[in-house]
Image 1: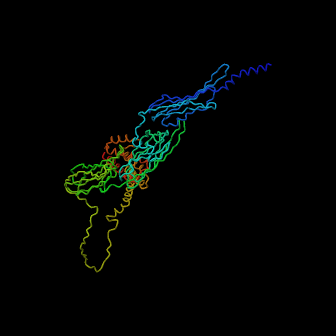
Image 2: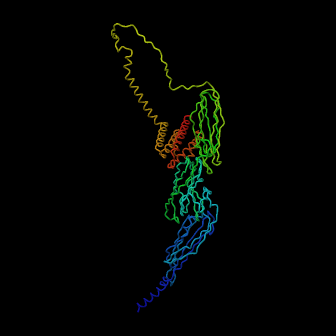
Image 3: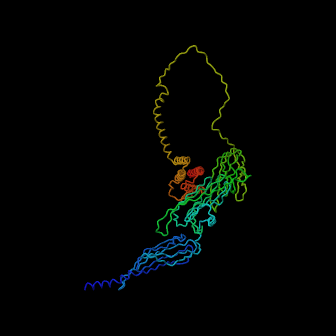
Length: 599
């Protein structure tokens, strides 16, 4: 009987526990955003939460968040508290909750509708109410650094020229004109359209091939974007490359397909990054010859020329410097000027300098020529007007720029340069052979003075030690020559030879390494200290402080920056560009050395 009462008591005590286990869990799923309306560039706090009393939470999802890459997740926090409540006669009840809290950065205006969040508790599915987030247009909807005209041309669903559409990401190559004249500038811009959350630091663009073009690249310092609609969806458009291309031959030329690789994340900061690669499509450009009739030596662009002499009076035999500047819009490296012969004046080969800059989608610059004129006869000498013919594609007509005539006067007697080899007199000279009286006999007369008593015998004995001394002096001279071979000028010549070898081997990276080494070695020898640790701005300040003129300092910085860029983009460097850079580098190092000797 006692045992029966004990079993009955245990059964009554267990009833509340059984009732609690059998009761259905109380579940609440909420989806909330604050504020519900923001402007582009603002942030909003999105919270999805599930609370369960008497059940076990298995999962909580908000799938629509991944649909909107325009809402960038800048932080994600997961909260999972658990509570236990105790009640007399009703057993122990467990209350738990799970919450995901997102901080969203709105980048594009629009209305974003979220389907109900889904939670699973004890195998059953529970849903929240739907949610709507409104993003109003604001200042952050358009960022600096983009080209609204070019990007807007791709927003229509029927116009995606230069691209292969992809709903996640694709590349587009835009040329501002597909039919141009030879030598005329065409702008080539490569855009990356993406709906993925990419990391700008991971973007590795690949330049498209542009065979048949001379290309000037406008460097992209940082990736900035604009939001544009394409095919009914919002994309972020990044400018990867911006170039001014000048065709060098007529016919159909092709801008090759660009490439890019980048890393993207998933729906939250905790997702593993994904490596994405995209390849664009080629774009054709039709290049026409210049219209006829027209000057045969005309270049494409719009230019003005100016000439002047550094002085108008000089002694006969002294040098006068003639400088001509051609300034305007176009590729100044196409400009050619030939100085006609000047009677009584010897003309040396000119030094040529180029300065170029890219602004508002146009490449312009200045090419300067400097001739050394040496008057070999006294009197007044005239430099005739110099003409430059060009074709302006904007006005579709030819034009001519001309300098004014310049004169200078040389004073003093005429100078005649002596030939290196004296001419040989080929006129025959008459000669008459004479003979003495005929001898009928001959006799051998022996010298009566011994050799040791001759005057030259002492010199003969002194010859071996003198020869030894001469040999020793020669060895010393040879050693000094070897020491001089390690001087700054010898090292400079060795660097130039190595650069020439790299040029012959068509090795751009090695060539530009030697170019940079040649300039930095010349500067280090001049300044008596290494300059490798100086930035370009600090180096320019240092050069000005050491007495370098502004022109030479700027040319040094421009050459180093151009060489550094070419070293990291060696695949796009042409043989012609390396050929042109070699004499420019030689001119710069020579001016640095002259500056060293002058000080």
